[in-house]
Image (cartoon, rainbow, N blue to C red; front, side, top):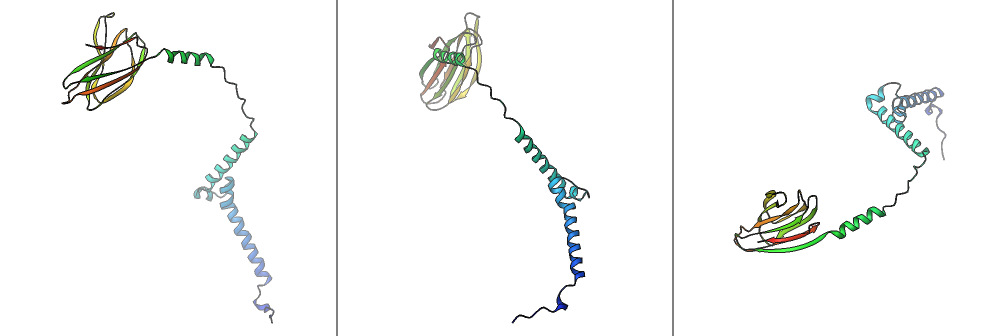
Length: 203
């Protein structure tokens, strides 16, 4: 059997009113100090700025404004691409005109050999060369009877592999001299693709 609560144990009307007022004051305080700065960037007391809440609210408001602006913008018109038939045709013709060559040289210890391409000024040739073993000494250089240039070096070193693009500075012969400074024979493979008219081993 349940017993009715003792009226003396129940809070009085005055206590209930007081509790309600305190809760309302606390809620209003949190609204002004925390919620307004953090959500809307409004900081009447300045406390939110100290706590970093005002900056957070300003960022949220700014992002919301940007999103609203983007949603109202009309999509940009797409300009149809212009035909590129002439450009593509020229590219195909250029590739078709390129010459491809692959040569191999075998060098005994301390032996040297040379290969040269015939290129006019501005013409290009992509190349890659590599050995089947150790590194070879090499000298990339050019010469020209037309311009009376006997020797002009543009690359020197020691390597097992080199690749790049050779651009002729003038009409003439352009190529590489290799020497095997190891104690065993080595084979050098040269692969070239470009605008050269001739490729020869210089004896």
